[in-house]
Amino acid sequence: MVTVVVILLAIIAAIFGIILGYSAIRFRVEGNPVVDKIDALLPQTQCGQCTYPGCRPYAEAMASGEAPINQCPPGGEATIVALADLLGVEVLPLNAENGEVKEGKTVVVIDEQTCIGCTLCIQACPVDAILGAAKQMHTIITSECTGCDLCIPPCPVDCIHIVPVEQNMNNWKWPAPNGGHAAPKAS
Amino acid sequence: MTEYALILLSTILVNNFVLVKFLGLCPFMGVSRKLETAIGMALATTFVLTLSSVCSFLVNQYILAPLGIEFMRTIMFILVIAVVVQFTEMVVHKTSPMLYNVLGIFLPLITTNCAVLGVALLNVQEQHGFLQSLFYGFGAAVGFSMVLILFAAMREKIAAADVPEIFQGSAIALITAGIMSLAFMGFGGLIKV
Image (cartoon, rainbow over all chains, first blue to last red; front, top):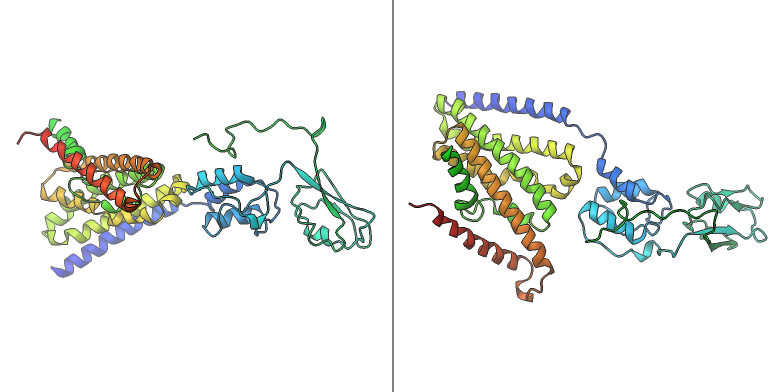
């Protein structure tokens, strides 16, 4: 009697195992779709102010619950609200240690009289917006600069300055419509 | 037909599994903090309850009863429930990764939701047939879902309300659940004995 029961239990467990094994293949999840969704909400400045080496690593850290959602100064409050909505957590104020939200877009310029050509800022730039070579004067490609200010701390002669970008006929863009995925919801 | 309607009415309102039979209180208190999560949990539990009710009926009827080994019922039902929950977890992970993240540990914990095993065992006790088991499981699930969603909606309002300090948190939630349970006792008068 006991033998029959044990064998029967083993057979049924094996059948269930096969069913589950098949559905594990059938419903396999490629990668982590949550990371993609978080990554789509981040501003993609790749500035590293969140202490991660770029937007995607930060998205991965948030998806695994290692990082809080309030470490992205370029995204500002709109991004935090969108992330809180996506991840189902409370909205947090921006962590001041990671930087401050800027009023409007800024870029940096190099004071070319002072520049000694050390190339340190080139290594710091996440978007390769700085042009120059060793012992040659450097300059910044303004249209590529994301305004992350990461080149300022490494500069030994403090020749990099922040300038606000003024809106004119050439760079004005139609503002994003309300209800976009990064905008805070009404309720 | 009347019989099935009565089973549904009985499980949803009169003998509601959470508020009258006090089964499945763990997810009822645990996942009712946000309405969206509660709806996700309700859907997952509905799926598991209905499917496991039918599966355990089939296992009992065609495997355990013919061989006369009904004493293995509990362990077999747990096995069936665990498989159904595992399957549900895979489906949820595939179809809604966000919900999967939000539900977290509560999704595998449906296995230990006593309402699920309760439905399976009550089916045997009340000698339900196949369709009766199906409706009994589904009705129990709908009752559970309805109560969970109602409770989550109330808790969202309570979170914004000015609750006296001593009642804050779980205390007010338990009191709310108790008052809801009292209200559901009123449905006992629906059926003349």
